[in-house]
Image 1 (cartoon, rainbow, N blue to C red):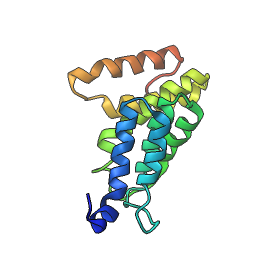
Image 2 (tube, one colour; image 1 turned 90 degrees about the horizontal axis):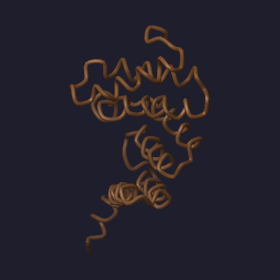
Image 3 (cartoon, rainbow, N blue to C red; image 1 turned 30 degrees about the horizontal axis):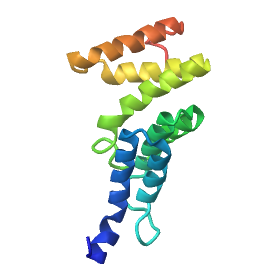
Length: 154
């Protein structure tokens, strides 16, 4: 592409796409770098209004790299970051999955209380999910039971 104006405007999205490709190819370090580059526009300002998007992308890349502490920190940042358009942009695809993965990561660390809390949130979000997704809800219920927690407790 030779149109420098177009390159400036779309450069950040290109880096985010390259990050997704690197993640799919199991190159987590390259994905981390590309996601970070994709968060900054040509003028060194945020590339988009989506504040929770970068933490979600980084969480997935850190998780793929086996860096569970960093993945946990970024998944928690994704969940906690306010964004006016969460209900339309990020949450339908990613909120339940972030809770599911945090439940697994906290369980692996032996943090029963946090694992149970995230499993409960995942179960609540996907309680009425499609039949094809219900095995994952059942697995979360089994994890919750094994942790000694009950769905009704937050």
